[in-house]
Image (cartoon, rainbow, N blue to C red; front, side):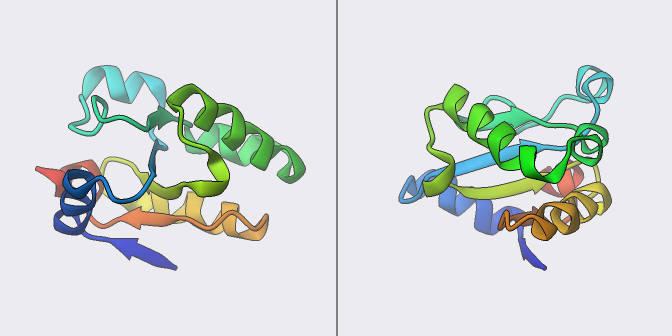
Length: 115
């Protein structure tokens, strides 16, 4: 599984050389309790791991396409980076998505590593 460090992600976001879709896999109530430093970044969406696990695989790409439309970043052109609070759930989400051909990276250390 691929991962990216906070420093690498910060550099990529600053350079704006690629289209990045940041997918927060935390539950919605967690986001309210613990803000994400990435939530204000263009390309940010919330797609909780619990939802990823419940959606039939053939619908996952469709859901990602819908989410990417909201950000203005085409799913097929996006570098998809998953994150959660500490990095554990984003790795699980990455494994699930890989089963259905969705290539992603996980932010090492999650939201906590961004600080």
